[in-house]
Length: 130
Image (cartoon, rainbow, N blue to C red; front, top):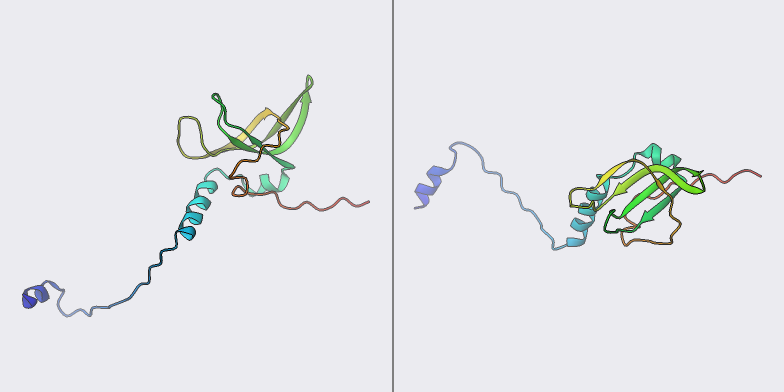
């Protein structure tokens, strides 16, 4: 039987044996998956550099939860309108996260979702000179 199995090996070639060490560390794998997931809808670096704030939107029956990186804020007929990059991490109806430029009413809520620390943060802005 050993002779028959030996005949199945490629002849004349050297067999290189290696050893691998596997660990039971799921936290590293989970962090890598989260990072790849959030990168799919993340704003470009120039948007992050120009953004003035982040606004988090709650999920409702008609709209998904989202993060907006505000580039400009204007008042039109007494309503605050924000323009910026909108990240929809869990779109209605399912699917991968989506990111695009958008115009929405600004909301001034103190809502902080559980994933707030996982999305890109704004780089520090230089302090204005007196």
